[in-house]
Amino acid sequence: MIKVGIVGGTGYTGVELLRLLATHPDVRVQMVTSRGEAGVKVADMFPNLRGFVDLAFTEPNPEQLANCDIVFFATPNGTAMQSVPDLLKTGVRVIDLAADFRLKNPVTWEQWYKVKHVCPELLNDAVYGLPEVNRTAIAAARLVANPGCYATAVQLGFIPLLEAGIVDPKSLIADAKSGVSGAGRKAEVGMLMGETGESFKAYGVAGHRHLPEIVQGLNPLSHVPVQLTFVPHLLPMIRGIHATLYATLYENNVLDLQHIFEQRYKDEPFVDVLPAGFHPETRSVRGANMCRIAVHRPQGGNVVVVLAVIDNLVKGAAGQAVQNMNIMCGLPESTGLKLVGLLP
Image 1 (cartoon, rainbow, N blue to C red):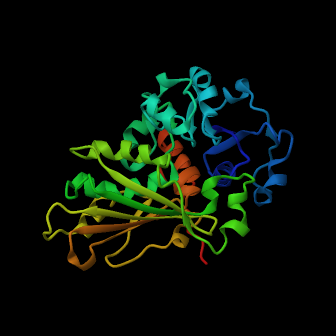
Image 2: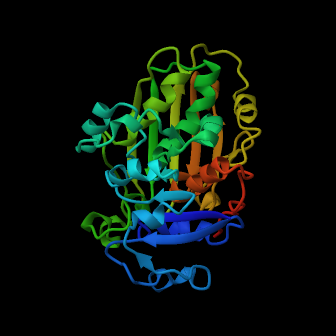
């Protein structure tokens, strides 16, 4: 059995991790930490876990964490980097669901996250945990940086086009929408139902933290640095991301875009390329570790439109983290993740 610890178990990604790991056949969750809720039974805070998780939240204890095989950090940005260096020295492998190790350049990280990185020497060691690209490196990693939710959907949508070299990397557009759970589980006026219900708005147009992460992931697939316009939006729903992606073909010639996408993802257990003409819905992936994609070429012109949907808390966070854990531990990738989306 894989002995697992979760640091920061009271947020949405933390409880989602617990939901997935509670029924994982090869995992035993040994501890779930929370400084603010230490001593509180996990199932008292999250009653959906009654009968599945019989643990209480505890203070983070380095010695107890060192007894784990894998430690997940489901903490705010800037928290994991305070503890990870010492934890790695004990031989524990780490998966960070926040952004502490996603960007390779510490100057870029500090520019976007407005705090000094305390262990920049680990940034090059960390493996970016997008399995569809980095599966081999993830298997051998001691530190995995779990991708951001927007970054997951946007990269999976653009990857086949850039790998095929058929679109202009200097004219990429990502128009993405997320449910309110993407903002985390905290008291904030802007996230109240009375503020978000029956409303729809863009935010972070001048720059969103997932932008450098997306660009960093796409650049190796392009012969020139990509130029991406990324505009996120807030939807009045709890879960889900819908990314509408635009790219311009180099030549307005006959291309079987459907075949390109189907071939790229034919062996990927958690990417589903829909038949030609289909439009994916966020509800089809709600609660599941799946990215559903459709590719279109409106009026047969030179603009490609890719539609990608994920559950921001599953494939965009906790589910992808469990997928990475499975790879790191030599398990079948879909172990504990054969989840059907919730309808209605």
